[in-house]
Length: 185
Image (cartoon, rainbow, N blue to C red):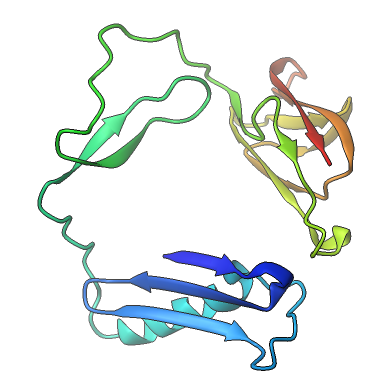
């Protein structure tokens, strides 16, 4: 599934497919007037999901068969990003690493990355904008933002504030496990 929102928030869309159906949903005002605070995820995607659920109400869909010449390859990424499977055209997949990389962190901040510059969207009221903090962390871990507790770890939604910020991930005993610095403009 892929979603999108036009500039000036005039409309949004969602396109996706299953084994049997391809569905595209457009939401907007025919006059071209903006739809403030509505994105492809919050506008068109829920309609797309409901249509797909109705279409597959009696017959479930299997995952699509990959095209010939495409292969799934496990990829180990450096840093705090989790391992995952990526799709490649045969012959373009990366070579397996000859030597294992540095030991992976047991706990890590996955988003935002250190050094990130996040920009508030001038077309969306600031009070409606959010940033999700994501972490790979042990049970009981918490966020510390600019020296203050900011919620339970794993995933936390924050109303961004312009300026420089320090985000830390701490365990249940307040031991710092990872720290990143980022800014909001």
